[in-house]
Image (cartoon, rainbow, N blue to C red; front, top):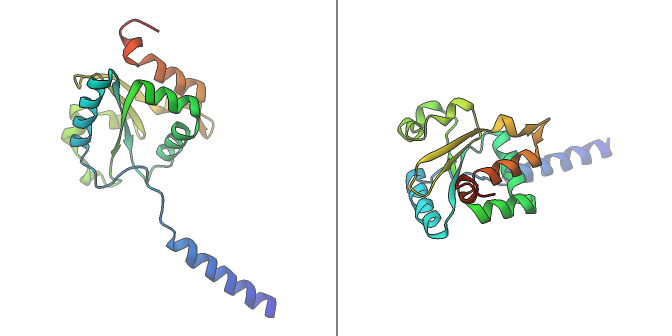
Length: 162
């Protein structure tokens, strides 16, 4: 009985600690996406890169998985940093809180689900929308497909180089 009581106390303490742990958020839910995109375009022009928008939300497990691969795989991280200015565009779970005008200006990428990747050139023109479903493999993302995507939509590749 004493062991059961101790186990219950330990379980309760661990539960309280875990509930107080702040969730890691990859999307800034208070960000101004339009201002972030504008700043990214200025940086992209100065650095001769394209802008990569990762559109999704903290509520989306596939968004979190993609971001995890992008930030933990050194080659993918290097490709991103060498070729893109990235903007994490938050989309609220509640459809009535979303920005339909922004989505329309980007060609309504939300039709593919989340996350969805949108590549903008330095002038802010959408040059590609990538349904992330095509980058998936089993319960994660396919590293080779993601690297191929990042290589094919760089400034150099779009201009006809490799």
